Length: 403
Ligand code: AMP
Ligand code: MG
Image (cartoon, rainbow, N blue to C red; front, side):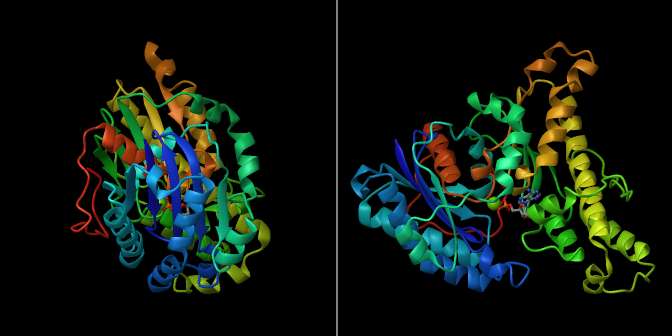
C-alpha cells in the first residue's frame, strides 16, 4: 500500500511516499527556519505564503524520488489538525484537489498521531531524506542538495546508540506515548493501534514552547530547543537550582519554569524583577548562558521523566514507551529516559516485568515535522478500518484533541 503523505501544519512543507506504513520511498522536507530565524518565531501569514510556494514542487519531488507516478499511489494523507490555520489550509486544499483529480481515497490525519507513528517508520529506508532550507526551494530542488537536519544529529545518534538499537523492533501495546512538541506536552495511553487516551497534559505552556522562550531570554537563536541543547554542552547543569512545578497526577506545567529562569537571570545580574527580558541576554557571560541553558534543560527533562515514571507505575501493563515530537530529539532527555526508565524503574520496585518495558525514540530525521510520519499514521488508520474522508467536505481544525 503506497501512501502519498502531505504535511504543512506549521513551518515545514513536506511530502513523502510511504509503503505499508514503514518503508520510506521518498521524504522531502522544506524548512522555513531560515526565514523565521530573523524574527525569532513563526509569522503565520508568511508561513502560509511559503507553503503555497513550496507545496507543488515538494509533492512533485516526492513522487520523482520514489520513481512513481500518480497511478502508483493508493491513498493520499494530509495533516488537518492541529496547527496554524493558514498553513493547514495549504496542505489540505492541495490534498483535497489531488484526491478529487486523481480519484484517490483521502485520509485526514491528526498531527500528534503522526508524531507518535514516527516510531513505526522502519530502518528499511530506500530513499534519503532531503532537508533543504526554504528561500531557495527551486535551486535546491534542481541541484538535489542534501543537508542533514542539523550537525548535532550525528553526535546525538552516537549518544543514543543504545536507544536506537531498540528501533529494530516495533512498539508493543499497551503503550505510553510522551508527546513533547512546540504546542503539546501530553502522555497518551494506547491500548491498540489508533486508540488514544490522553492521561496527562500541560495546564499552560508546552515544553517545546518553554525551550523556545528560555532561549529568547538567553539570546539564543530560533528555534530554541536545538540552540539550548547546543549551548548547554559547555554548561554546568547544577549551577542554577530551578523549581519543579507542584502539579498532581500526570499533568504538566511549564510556564513557572520559564519565569523561574527569568528571575534567576535577573538575580544573577543583580537587576530588579521589573527589568525586561530582552535587556538581559546582552549582560550575561557566555559561561552564564551555558550554565543557564544546561540547568534549564536538566530540570525540564527531569520533570518529563518524573511524570513518565508515575505513568508507568499507574500502568504496569504498559509494554513500550514511545517518545514523540520535536523535543524528543533532545539528547539529554533520551539519555535520562534510557538510564531511568530502562535500567531499573520496575526492577528497583521488584517488578519482574521491568525488562519488558521497551523505549522507542523516533529517528532524528523524523522527530521534527515531516510527511513520512503522516504516511505511517494514515496506514494504521486504513488498517484499523477507518473510512476515508470526503475530499469535498474536509475541513481544518487549528485546535483539536487527539482521539
Ligand atoms: P514540533 O512542534 O514537534 O515540530 O517540535 C518543535 C519544537 O521542538 C520546538 O519547540 C523546538 O524548540 C523543539 N526542539 C527541537 N529540537 C529540540 C532539541 N534538541 N531539544 C529540545 N527541544 C527541541
Ligand atoms: Mg510537530
